Length: 78
Image 1 (spheres, one colour):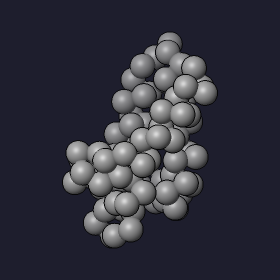
Image 2 (cartoon, one colour):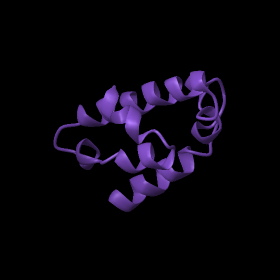
Image 3 (tube, one colour):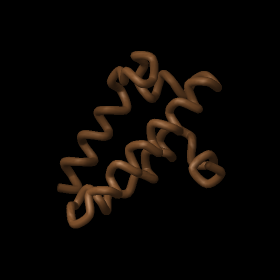
Image 4 (cartoon, helix red, strand yellow):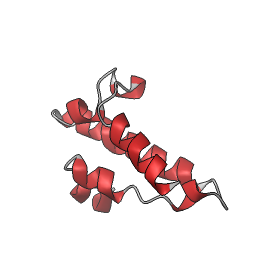
């Protein structure tokens, strides 16, 4: 399951996301407003995942995505 989730989210970083204005997360982080939207999106993913108690999704570690997108510092501040 971990490998499946890793592949899914790795692919997602390059796909257009409606909440990011149709930009991929990698594209969105290039602007200040886009970075804020990506931070909110990542927090949404983490919170949604955590609500799946007893599921492998509940324990999924999203930290690599914060690092990959250059947002690790915002993960701590938010």
